[in-house]
Image 1: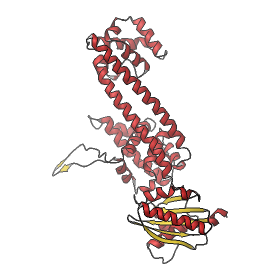
Image 2 (image 1 turned 90 degrees about the vertical axis):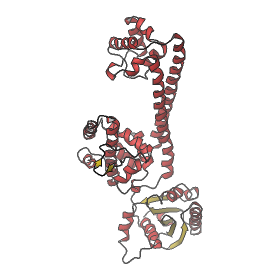
Image 3 (image 1 turned 60 degrees about the vertical axis):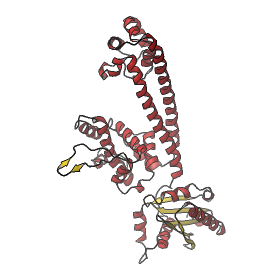
Length: 425
């Protein structure tokens, strides 16, 4: 037997919206504390003080605290107890368990009344009997990780806005480059080093008047010889230069400064993004290992996307089904119907957690390139409409991913293309 368990205080908390009932027992099952408090910060801090005093008075060195996942009402108290420094001194562990688990354990008692004191006792006794088989609650650590994943979201959106703004200046200088089709663009990355040098340093007339040989040498130098057919790139570039509108000469210098400023801003933001990604990868280690292992078993989902999803979900036990998780992410659609009329298209609510929705959509955007099932689903949804096909297909694919993620986390299983992928249909 683990000797630590003999020196442990087991605390069960029956949580409701307005009050919390505490029951604390030792290893022998003796009741050390029984009391009720309001479900607010001052009352919960007094409860912590009572628990610490009980630990000292009974010469106990450890404390295990158990409560059920009761919608949002258990979140604040679980977070408070899991991050309290006074409880840390007693090697505190906080567990937020599924109500079904405690309900099944309660069946081992015959003819027990269902009251708040008895419910709190059952939770404490579960811990005493070693019937809790999950990781301790880590809300404080998840909160810290969430700061990083949300900062990443902010950086990505800022980069996107800066690129959109810069494109307006690019249109003024190279109008045909702005409107060019994908196959007519001279470079695969509009914001790469080669594009930056050409867009910032040359006017359309400069490009037209430069010899093909000199332009090819310039492109190869800036592209570090990575272009397999530079003459084709130069041919497309010269066509765009010829077709673009011309500006007054006095306008080019100010626009060049503005474009260079945007390029430098984007570069600085992207460098910061790399720092954030490394910090996320560092902070996820040892945190929710089981959940991260499950999410990372899905093809195309790595540390960053898994971190973003888990930091916003917290525990899957907070959600009764995949519909609740989808609603939390804002991946739901409102039906539009009146009389015999029913709209063919519906708008996504977007009223949920925008950060979770972002990481789900980013994850499925990667997943569809690795999973035949998701790729076929995305393609099918893409071909159903003519307007906004890509965004719609990604959003619907993200909703499908929600079903898959909920199933994997709820059943504590790794992804399998042959078995679990079918659950998302």
